[in-house]
Amino acid sequence: MLDALRGVAAVGVVIFHAQTWFGGGYLFLHGDLAVDFFFVLSGFVIEHAYGHRLALPRGGAAFARTRILRLYPLLVFGTVVGIAVYLLRNHALGLPLDRQVIADCLASLIPFPALWRDALFPVDPAVWSLFWELVVNFGFALVLYRMKSPALVVFAVALAAMLIVKSVAAGGLDFGPYRTDWAFGGVRAFYGFIVGMLLLRRVRSYPQAARWSHIWVVIFVIAMLSANPPRGIWSTGYELLVVILVNPMIVLFAARSAPIVPRIEAWSGAMSYPLYVIHAPILLVVGGVLARTHATAYLPKWLIGLMIVVILVGLADALNRWFDVPVRRYLGRRLA
Image: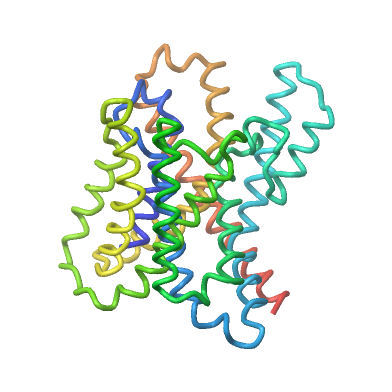
């Protein structure tokens, strides 16, 4: 079931960033909180797959190799597409190809935040969470996997307190992609990851969920990411509730649920990462095409939005099948 939710969460992020093409907000209005779901899921999966291996001889090197092979091929592909779109967009706007623009492009390939910009990842904004994913993975390999559960609980509580204080002060959880509060993106990432680790360590003590119950979880996730509480403290409180409590509960329940349609759920999980990586630059391209063709004059916006999602999901599936899997297989053999 976790694979199915990966796909739902990735589509939620896409629709959140494509609200303009849906004619206003009514679906996945809090799709950005799916990023925090991914952090929890990452901690859960990585603790399961590597928590016991890192203590082995050369365990750290094997972990680094595996994570780089998993993340970097698509990250580089998405970044190259993003650089092309970024440069073309700057050219269309009459902006010069100066040192800052070149530095933006080079930093995005690492990836590393462009600390000289207000938006830290101007080439592909979605990469902010992947940057912190890499940082957290590094922290896991060095320290976190060694920590006992009580110490991780203390760490998680401290991070949750920081999230609460910062969110109340800032009026929401929209921090991480911007220079003014970029370090708190790390707080979001480490909190979710550590909670995911703790869930894995406890999940075997929970009963198996009913076979058909996870359909309701998918419906609940869609409703949760689409909720639109009143702005202000209510909205901030809702975001904190989702990030601190609800996302972990969903991962815990999903981990105990058997798949109903294994192939479809596996496909959903496989296309989620390429979809997340490529959606931002492709949305810019599609937006430019739609603006030039005046498509909104003769097509309803909901249909345009649906077409965009279908195109992006199709591209993500193609990338997974014909780029990511073959490239990772090839590099795995070469680096073995």
